[in-house]
Image (cartoon, rainbow, N blue to C red; front, side, top):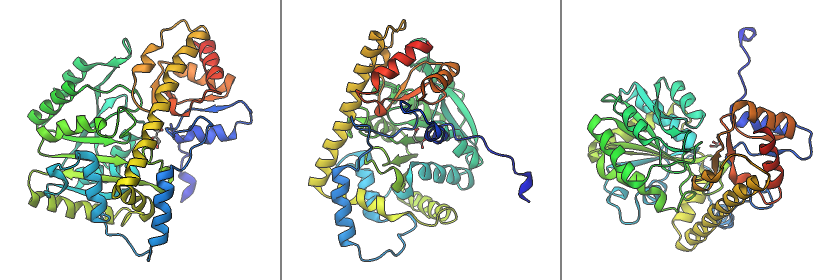
Length: 396
Ligand code: LMR
């Protein structure tokens, strides 16, 4: 049967790391996948995670299955992170949460639920968006449309274009938004713009689906949820897909959550029953370890404070690298103004480099970035910066 199977192309993001590993050049640099590295180029286990993990292992009595939607305390802790301490949506039953295998698991669960249970046929994604978004939603059987988002002329948000495109959204469509640290552009709407977006989607009777993979990497844990909270004030129904890969450094533990907000508790409970059915036929129930670590940290004020200060330190290091990167490009003689890089949020810098320039960086200099020109600033260190800048200036 298998002789008719055609080889698939490499993954546009994870496939780059596969190619990087095969490159024998000593001076190669991998700035493709969104993984945080410290100034020594390591991706360490956070100290708060290590402490929580020790307690989880010491206290564990069983490896029996988790509930299909995970532990109720996990859901509650996730909702508190999303909506803020004391928010009614934490406990009022209108918002329900499934513990999922990573943010990708949350997105796929969302896609499957929308397509097979909620009668939604089409989802709109920003242009550009994370390379895996369209693939996930297409795999779930949804039609994927694009709305204008990034303006290459000023390296900022094309808000007029975005609003015009959202006017085309039909009742019953879903619209994917990045809660903060837009991947790949690093360009986010401001709070007034979030309010306008929420109003448009509410008026159109479209469903906001919010991908929240970088909470804490933009301005801070609370600040980064401000756009989502604007949507929650305006729209009765929405979904949030959380990833804890980056902010807890739990990449390989596949730890995430899907939160669904409905207009009443009864509807929310029907939605949860269908989400559970959808999860059951997909991965059955979530992997326990990462979720237990997150739960331990969020449920213990001391560990939570430690985690927030570690997250603050990651964000500040990235901000410092942004400034140093722009300075070093200038020193290397860049003819272009790259100062916009300091205004972008999160792990990534959308450099404006063309596909050909990205290819030359790889072939001639052993520098691996994503084909769209996205550079992982969180992978830069003071020691690889000069080499990177020199190479970029050489391919400009
Ligand atoms: C990225 O965009 O690099 C990350 O979200 C990792 C991934 O799975 O693609």
